[in-house]
Length: 222
View 1 (cartoon, one colour):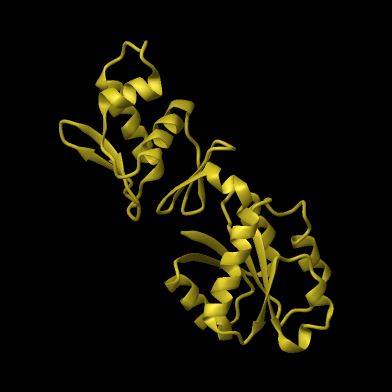
View 2 (view 1 turned 90 degrees about the horizontal axis):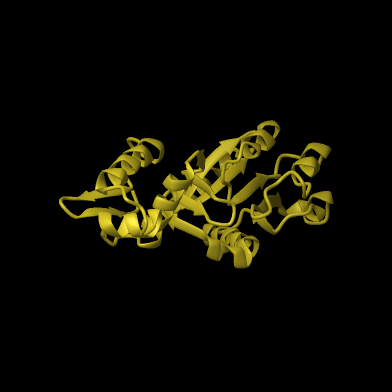
């Protein structure tokens, strides 16, 4: 699911927000003065959608969009009024423009295009399983945009399960692939690490790891 931060969403844009959620986006909203804080804590944000229909292109917006303030793979999309196309807002360093009012289909297509463009070739390093995201390049894990702190073995175990999504992995397979053939521990080691993983990545809204009785475990989009 794509994580989208909607900055300064007004009441008249709620219909667009609803359509974006129907299209599979997970939306968080915040005012402009909180946007930088929202994305500075390591949370995953695939796209920043900024409403400029009621805001001038002031210094705060330019500072937010400065190259050093945003993660490199966060796409930026601005919503403008048609009268702003010749104003300073149209010159902002953003990936896509949406002229309001625009059809929801067009807005969704532009946002997805911006995300694909920003993701680039490194998207091959990202594993996704529903709201679970594993960035193999940076060894970072997120659940619905929330960063999760894992030990090295917990990360390797989770990565292997995600690489074999919806496939049953036996305890013997997990021991040999994650711990190595020369490891002398038993299946209990796997069970303990699975329990710790569940405590960190699962909650009432997310259940990723399934136990297959007398066999092992599998991961699915929870």
